[in-house]
Image (cartoon, rainbow, N blue to C red; front, side, top):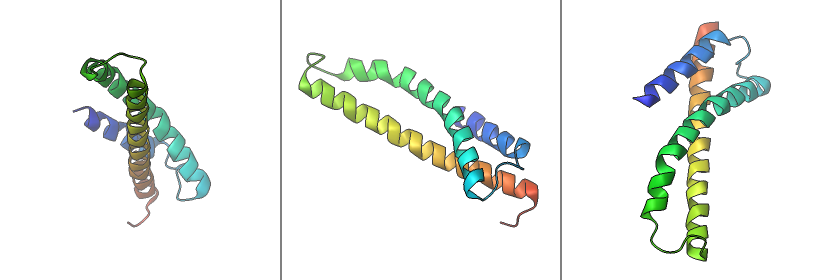
Length: 105
């Protein structure tokens, strides 16, 4: 259900800032920055929910080399998810902004 809210937020961003979010380099940077802010909060929510479960699932002593490696892999997975979400929602926002300007898709 939360994904629906993020879709609506990005559609709203595209409708409001359609003059700034263009299919140019600068417009793409603006769109990616706006998406990064919105998805940063989404990733914080994901981190807040998954970190206790991640810590509870680890068997062994915290601070060991194996634990540090698993924490590193966990952070890399979260970073990849952040990159995927930013790029996907940036494209959605650009598409909505383009439709608002009257671009043919």
